Length: 218
Image (cartoon, rainbow, N blue to C red; front, side):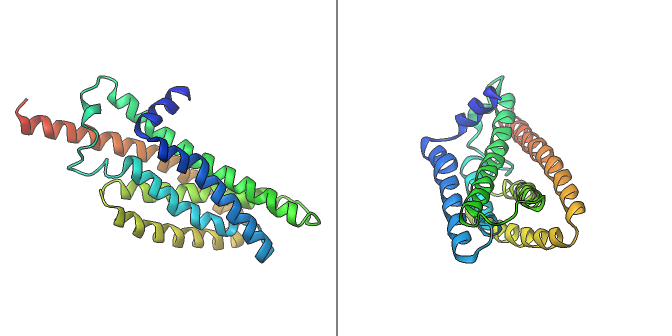
């Protein structure tokens, strides 16, 4: 875990860390509290649709375009014997960051709702629903991340953010109708897409290295 954090920080600036680990969670918790106060519903039903697009933008800031054919901002890693190891750990670190922020926001939204409405009975749904939204939001976001990394364009990420929000809205509807199947499928997709995202990124980076080697005649 320590190595993954260090590898991830290799790719991130101080500004990014402030945004990812401070501004985004505080924004999500504050927005969720406002939603709970105004609408009398747990804030995570709304905040999840804001956090997902912002997580996509954060991924673009670090890994945007790494699967694109003409990627050039990772050349310094290709000359390092530990480049692939660092890259793999950084990718895993990015996923941990996403899960951590989602979990903090969801927990903060749950706590603020309980503070505003202490008479509400805390049942199994109060645990299952936010947990399911967290996992499904992560899975949907990772799916969009896999696509987005093939394009070194922020505009593509804006489009993917809209698609992600629409997909998560559909997941929320299925969660109401088919709770447990939706949770199981979300968990499976989260695991599969996490593994696939790393494998694709490493494969494309390796291919770009060989393409450049052949082009240079070395």
